[in-house]
Length: 383
Image 1 (spheres, helix red, strand yellow):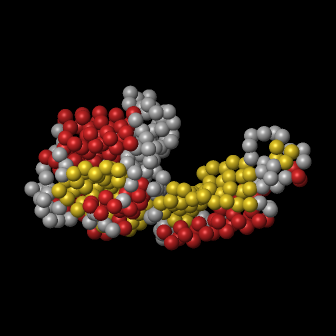
Image 2: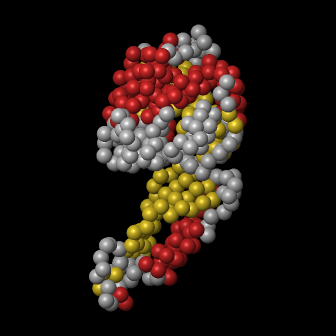
Image 3: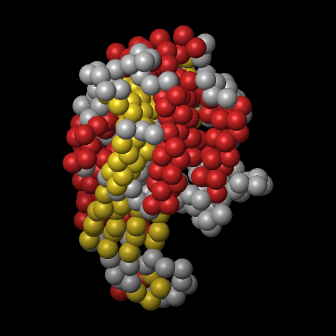
């Protein structure tokens, strides 16, 4: 059990993380801070540099048994924070407005519990993963040769989920997070004087046509294996000038599906549509892929383990709000492990994720760590 002193220290730690956000792939200081916080807990070993700046703390019982991994994320977002709090971001244009500072702190709290009361068998792995926000981190971690040393049999993660009652967990077996992929579409034409637009090749009409056509690729409101969605997130045509007809257009489209192979089909459809529209307007076209997330699937056995743990400690749970359109690269850990994602509510009316006024509620720290701790005890026992 966490003491009042623990909670005070963990709250201060979370707020210090909040002050110093780092973007995906840049989490060097955050990783160092995590390592410094882990050392007093005397884990069996600490691995660093996993998939970039990833950190893994190994608590090995010394007795054969399963390896149970619990994951949190290191990275922040490129969003200017607008909060009147003492611990607001000190880094202009960057902020922890997705709860990753809180997720890291819950994992550190679990480390305190396991350090004081070791498990009876197997290993507990605290995995602090880099680069979740752009979808590259989990793939890089599991591809790292060091990961073979901590290959998990079970994997669990908690993500805060605004819209749900305080302390309530939304989760389900099966699909939990959609696949998503960002596609940058560049239409290439030719500039001209604004008085003589016929001398150039403008992408303006093509961009307008493409926006409308992409919207028609959406299918289904229910989030299932047939669901697909295309969202236009950014459009730019030419440069801000009254004297020049634009020669280039850029469009960002984010695709979401309930299956990985459905994403392949949707991406092909979007590319073919863009090529057809470009050809009609005598434009060149180029593509660039970013933020590529696979679907996250909750294994039925892992879900049952989590549900049993939550029942044992009195945490309410249900399938409200899941599966989600939002993506999560945690599903990659489930490719070779039985994995489950749990979505922890901060209370109705709480600020939404990725909003500039979001801040993780510290009162969730003991709840999240208690869920993790009970899962670990149910799978590995207590020495």
